[in-house]
Image (cartoon, rainbow over all chains, first blue to last red):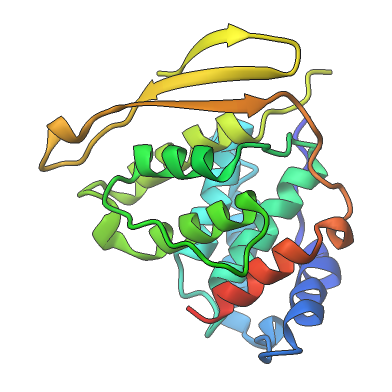
Length: 169
Length: 62
């Protein structure tokens, strides 16, 4: 059975995580103070429970693409999308990918050939660098290759299915 | 869509055809990636480590 995040998890865990780890170099947005964004986030978390997104990986893709690609909050939407995605994966004990940097790059460029991979010396972990590039793709419609948002979610879901398998019970 | 080429105890290899893009179907190409079998994602958000904190910081700059 799929486990879901609730707004209480965002308020109690996700927002503090972002604030705790970002305030050294840049002030994180006060998500809770932005009522409109909180309302939209609540809708996303509720809708991902529906059968409209039948599989675990469809739901993971939906939650990332919806939040990271949105302007729900004044700032910090990509960070929130990534953090919510990772919490959703962890909550369901999904697999942790162990591709090397070349493999991640091949996977992303195979799905989004127009995206120019951005190397960043800050990253030691290739999965983090992959998520960084994926977030850039989601936020830049020019590299989608003419596809719409639904196909974007499908492609992202396909990659997650490969990278984050669910443990068979 | 995906084809698992072989299975071993710890690794499996997957090949797929990229979808190319709207204006250039010849952009399709065969892509193969190797993935290690299951290791659980860190369950505790505080165990995600420095790499993910770096990820968040880098995203904050964009």
